[in-house]
Image (cartoon, rainbow, N blue to C red; front, side, top):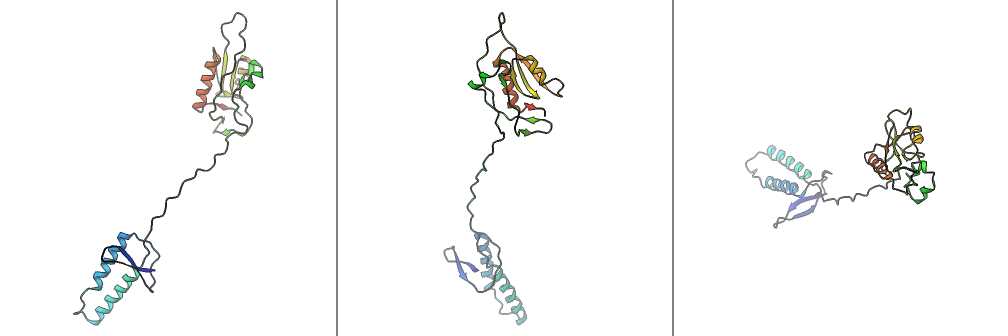
Length: 205
């Protein structure tokens, strides 16, 4: 431990001391103010005091001196925050629709796989956002101007499909199941991706 005092220029200096002090840390301003008080007490005029008063004063002064022998706190460099690695949420991940998906039957063009450890919600297994992307439309039936694409956002499986029967199969009898027909793949994809953005796509176990 050291006894803190000030030089004539106002800067700190440390004086070795054999007396034990406290283990607390104080800032330099507090240490300087405390040392000023001690210096004033050391020059206090006790010439007219009796022996008992002088002894008591000296005891207090010694205690304060010992208390003042504290290390000056130094600034500790701020720790650099390192973000922990983020583990994949899905295994396997939600598949992006790619050229390879075109090999699937037209009725199941955009059905999502629902196996794997999905994120578990309070009631449903929730799929985190990962947008579907468009693939080539199959040819339109003869005499038809469009085909209905069915967007299933909550059911025993989710995704978009051209098959009305498949859409019904994944939603009939399922509490809260949601699906909607759209007149183009683009509209169905846009609707499904919006559901994803709002965390409204879920698979009923």
